[in-house]
Image 1 (cartoon, rainbow, N blue to C red):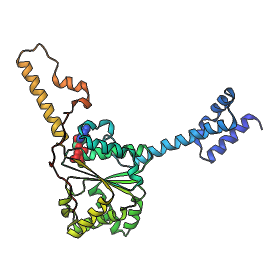
Image 2: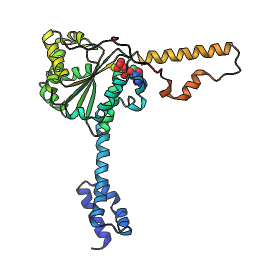
Image 3: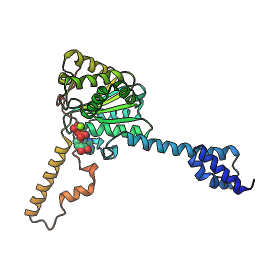
Image 4: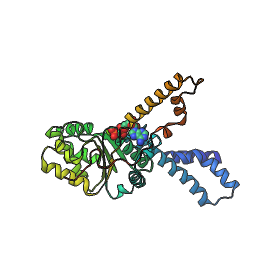
Length: 300
Ligand code: ADP
Ligand code: MG
């Protein structure tokens, strides 16, 4: 067979076998192999290595799309220095992802604006980039989807589908008052995931107020019990990030005005200066969060 005909047939086989990366690079790699006197095995390894790497990249891109994670809420835009030391230590461990292997849950509590959603999304994003599958969903939307599935007698199938993910990130549980029917599907989901796959959730409500979600004390206790059994609890007893930012902004503006009145020759605006310093440095460095502030989740 001439080398042209051989190449043509080879490309055909690589198409049939769905090996696009190898198809793309085999000629170039063959030249390199000749120049560097690589063994057959080394050449084959180089080719398959590229195919494996391409598949990994594509898989992660697919997982990221299907995760429905808000992509602007990543670790790159999250100021970890704002967290008390214990909390950032917990976050570092969670980023390793081994809690998923142990089917542990991650429960983030704290007042509105303290950064629960952003923090869990940022962790989830890192996990996805390490090859894990996560699905982000606002609790209200999840409940609606489960109700539709139940109405169509497809609840079991819907739960099974959710079971494909290493973790389900349920945002804002208890934020919207739920009817009994809504509570029931949510409970079914939590019971279904118990000890099988991880749940990550955020809530403004401490456990002591969860009866407003699950309606009766028995169901509430059962739900909490399942969630807490193997879990990491993150307490974000921090002031609202947004409030803190707008207060900082206001203070900067007042300073600017005062400087102007004092007749400083065209001082560079404080706000401009802080803008230049970038988001990382603009945040207030907080000391340890005061104990006992904000909702402290307690069992029962
Ligand atoms: P929560 O879910 O607790 O109500 P969010 O995570 O929605 O709070 O945070 C509120 C806003 O503040 C979001 O825009 C978020 O990106 C921002 N934010 C909160 N904490 C931080 C932080 N530590 N670093 C950067 N941005 C933050
Ligand atoms: Mg939130």
